[in-house]
Length: 473
Image 1 (cartoon, rainbow, N blue to C red):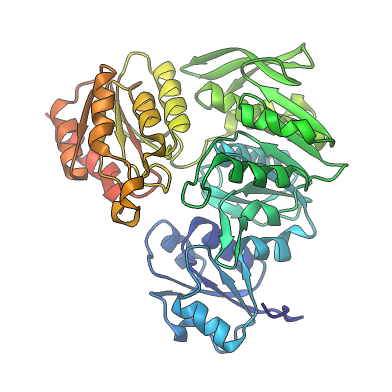
Image 2 (cartoon, one colour; image 1 turned 45 degrees about the horizontal axis):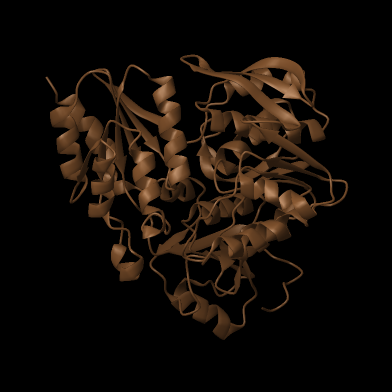
């Protein structure tokens, strides 16, 4: 890579329509740069966001998409070295950065970096942290891997000292296979959880664990690490750590503990204990004990910033969550349709447990699309069956683009359904979305809770489901 020019005005983003890349483009535009982009798959909501920002985006990759007067290229991790635009960048000797490198170069150098990492809960925790800081007048910046309902966006460039970053463990670019969070230089770090995931780039748990061990060493001595010890792998990281550390838990002894968790219609109530001493009773609008843990992690970071806990309950109650995290997409004739991003068996289990506690009188449907790099593989096949069996009726879609997974590694949806049936629950494999919608509409009744779980668009199932239910007599 060439050294960066002293003056940068025009930036071109390759693979601009990913959540991280599109949000970075928004930050750059807000900071006053002229931004262009290109991508192979351009569709809402990111296409709408980029259009609203007046960022020109070219459909499909082509060498001529690279402006002649461009000063810098930002390359997303969705493209490889043989991408035609990447080849043009290398041919012309243009300077380039990965997405996380660009975040560091343009935004993190002058900010206090608050990083939230972990297998589960990092989007919700970082969103919650950003919202509370905003409501308390800190004017934070943030870059998060989900749309915050309070902001209707995934990024913000504020004038305050803090910048909240969702610390993704996925790789940075074809030329940098290390995780994104290595570039975020955390002053304060939350690790919400740690389990095996991303089977396409981490061949075993040890390879993933090593990167988290490196991450905690990036926290300076005057910083802080908040560790959720409900996960054994997180607790194990503490062994060789000598910096400032605060633990939290919803299950046992820790510096910050949530006890007496009660999930009800108005939210989730819990008692906060710090160092074994009762502090106050709290109410969170979020469902489930795992979301209580997310609140605890945020409280530890806010305490580090010397924000009194007494001022946090109000903003917490105003937090409206993140799109695609237990998001109610519609209520039709006493049937609730929920969209959720869960794509790991632990997340599936936690989502279904929380919803069962919140809606105990409802019959629970789980519609599951194996779409992520891990869920399309057989590595968690039995665990998915056990997690999904918490629902009353389970519908499984074919794994997304399964032909891209080596045959011997593929999840077997037939065996998945058979395993669920052996656990005493109804399960059916469907050829596609239309078949799933047809079954739900045909068999649905009042007080059905229909939970659709996918980390992608799922062929428009949400809209199709709501339209189908509206046609019921």
